[in-house]
Length: 468
Image (tube, rainbow, N blue to C red; front, side, top):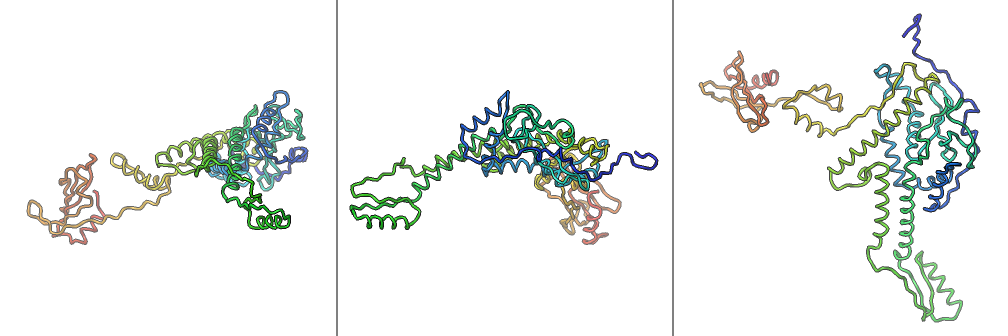
């Protein structure tokens, strides 16, 4: 829309520095979360503290999360789920039409960082994301407020590490135009809460397995001696010490030394199976499936798991789309980073099919349907070229009236139930057609008079005029 020759919808953004008092991260007393060994009891106590009605405190629970997130399998699952979101194409819309220029303005590092942090709300339960200075129409930084300071039940951010229930109200001015809260504010502690016992059991199993390897993986060395000479005994101990890292001992000849075990050769399975089970449960918790990260037994199972994984991705996209449309777009319009006429954001879901899958679908349907070649090429990214007909020529074939032809067939005889002369052209060419085994009519070939066409001319005519 223009007024006096000027576009009044399009906005121009100026560089804007975030006010110092709005920078929440700078205004809280930062305290490092001390890393320490976690166990089930500490997790239960931390969860009880976070669930408190009077003074909810997430700090102890975040200490637990800080430890379990180091698990390699869990970390990989979280990254996989995030990649399904951040790798998806998207568009901004104005009046139902894609706005290419506005869409490009979101194709920036800060936006992908926002998507990454927003999805953290699924794992931690709740996030507050803050935006930094604006320069050249982009945010110079985007970061989340550390979860240990959040009290979403009261809508505040604590200024210190303690359990007080007073602090910065992120939903009120002037913070609301620089912050976006994401997630369920009422006692939602995310998927990491369910993952915690699985990771802790797994860590214990790996620790005990390591101890088992140390005890039984390398043979224990021992010396039995009845010497009372301290120098000789000390020499024997030094010798054993310098021979390697395996366990050793120096005993009297009358001493009895035993190592107790169950005698099974597959005792490692006790630990291995627990680790596998924990990994499997974590996969189902985060991705809904196991075969997205582990090998499966059949293609049919893989397809089922793939469909479930797609549903998880769709769910995440819908949640993030709601956050962007309800919260991010108004914030961007306030800062004049996108035009006022932008009314929607949406992810573009593209189902990528293998070339073989597309070929199978087209082959199965082409008997009853026609296809737009350009649309197929654009939709699936295929290069589709016209098939060059290489006719099979039988020379000097005589028909029932004694006339000789170049008999050219472009289909396999075995594909047809019946074949007969379909049409005779003015130049004497007979078009042969019939009913195929799938019940459809198709052209089988041509009888081309050899008194008016050479073999080369017959082939060229079929190439230029075939299937008429």
